[in-house]
Length: 549
Ligand SMILES: Cc1ncc(C[n+]2csc(CCOP(=O)(O)OP(=O)(O)O)c2C)c(N)n1
Ligand SMILES: [Mg+2]
Image: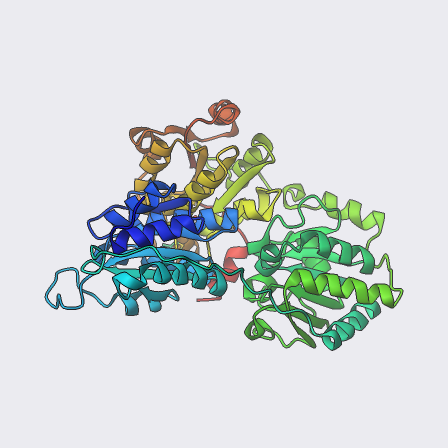
């Protein structure tokens, strides 16, 4: 394609830098730039709401490890992105949002708002198409900043600059600089602490996932006799390993929580150890020694003082620790006995007994999660929305790979996981992606059912439908508050899904899951399960959440 306008140069520059997938919603302010991306070889996936487009790009980016790209109209097109943009910012998702913008001189335009201030307020970085001659550089800078700073960058495209003639510039893309290597002295101290440990525990967070540190951490744990756990964000990193305890925090099974709290040395890799991961500190013994490794120095000691601080990439630190322990000749079976492996294997959440006696016409939410875990292929992705139900997929629906786990709770917003699941499925269409939602989250994102159907993605939308904002009911009901404002009449979400072009089934018992088994053998498009769950059943972890305000 030849050189044309600034808008075309922005689009073609991004395409030439490898952008091949774009989510968005077309308006006059982003039409030309989007078409330029498509001409450059990118595929455009239209959402039905700009918030959905950002959630999709977020899910796509979490799945692929590459920056997500979004294109929206100015003004309302951008304001509609904000909640999903806040989630992407807090989850440190690299993303470029291309947004039209009102001309500087158009003081009375209906569309005029402070777009820079708007996106800055939710943690995204505003960038600007300064002029036609800087179009290529502006586009390249936005993409680079998104990757370097690991957050959304919103490139404002004033609609008076967009049509100006511009030339594509020759770009000289640079590889990203390497992450900091660990300081030798800090590694030496941490190795001494680990070598002296009797009951070590390694906790991996999202930083360990981004660093690809899973295998290195298992090797380190083997060398030191440590147990392994993840934060909620890093679920799946140690899938299938015999000494892995699963998610640390409120979602931890009783034995796992007991073993975590009994650890005398805790080493955190790319995990901030927030109140969720530690149950407000209770999962780390008061006298346990803490070693914390993070690329972000500010994350170290943020929630609990760390005896040893290492500013480094999780993989580099794990490797350096192993080498140092090799030099010390350290090798310990530590906590790793065959008997403990058997005990851990026998005390997963699904092994904990519960009384499966839901109210008539409803299914126990745990029974639903366990049945789905059995029914779906192991190579699946799971995106989890926010709500009282969130614990069930986290506790019972395993994933084999942390890139297949999209825990859309960095902003604790309801309504983002359906979009994230669609984005994940666009990235990996050969496997099933589960969108785990409550009925409240489903209604906040309903319009994207049409998107899922139109795109033909293999998304299984599972709605834990208690006809309520259950989190609020369980929070305020016990206080004696009238909870009627958070309760609704029964709604037929399966029929709504069918109306949008998806399969839709109502589930009141495991016997109703037959159509899912059929669908899963050849999922040519989305399928929604409206599971009428017993509204009286809630998880113990929820009380933890209520304490956080
Ligand atoms: C956008 C947004 N609105 C409101 C809330 C407050 N809130 C937290 S959980 C919840 C209930 C969600 O209902 P549902 O999706 O049905 O899940 P449930 O709690 O019933 O399992 C609400 C309203 C929020 N976190 N995000
Ligand atoms: Mg609900």
